[in-house]
Image 1 (cartoon, rainbow, N blue to C red):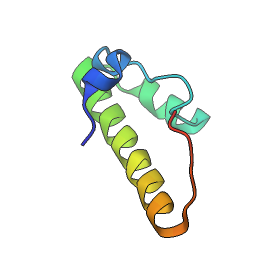
Image 2: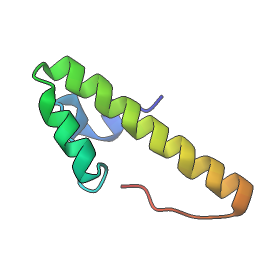
Image 3: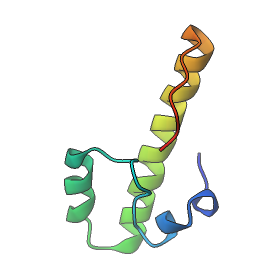
Image 4: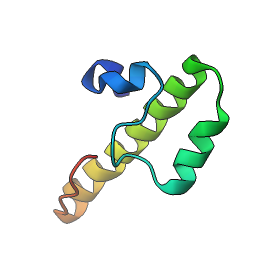
Length: 66
């Protein structure tokens, strides 16, 4: 799992620029509790990082991190 220390804005429940799609931004806006926003963001960030890693290992594709 990713750490919020690598992206300090996540600690406040704010998505780093370019991390989320418009639909994901809308979903994030539905969470009113900072801890819930932070947990959800860390999950999205971790999932996207895992996909980047698998694509790089399996296909040699390099997708820049958000």
